[in-house]
Length: 57
Image (tube, rainbow, N blue to C red; front, side, top):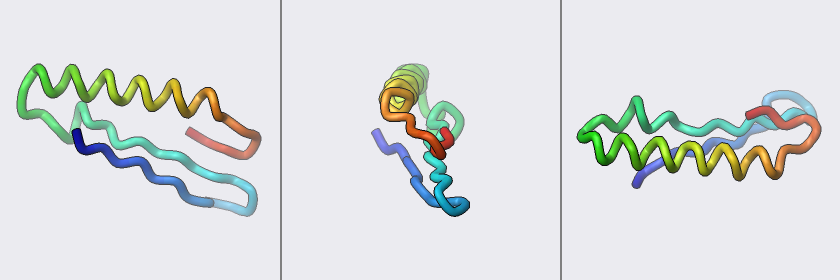
């Protein structure tokens, strides 16, 4: 399942972590859409566990 995670410094000491919304960009079938939503939720949970000061999700 392709997904895109982008990590970049947007200001000195401020890091932005962005996750591609695969539910919007991958719409070929209901099964793939459900899988995309599960992957996105899992990635959000992982990122929330490692959240640090100066990091934006």
